Length: 148
Image (cartoon, rainbow, N blue to C red; front, top):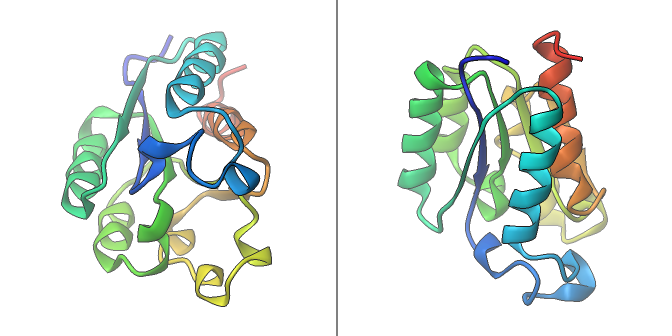
């Protein structure tokens, strides 16, 4: 078991997962996602810090905290993906695996969603796999850490 936890960070409006646009995001709640992530992480011996905020500064604070306390980051920055230089810059300082996750395939959606300020800082990007993308993100971090 690694001593440092995996940080799983969620951006604006993800607290409404399961009720907001279920035709796009499905019916799974963020609490369901957290339970699935914790179960997957446990198979690798990883503890999880799971957070959600609608505030950009809070996300930046958690990324900065992860720099010294985490073994990796799985992040669904939601709308912050498309404009947050602050999230980009915070991730740039992280020397650990970072996986960007999007529930929907952002490339099949509105043009403004095709640009990511997060992707240049990410080890991997998972989009369009639904909430399974979070668990796949855990797998990616675990592999980068050499966990089986």
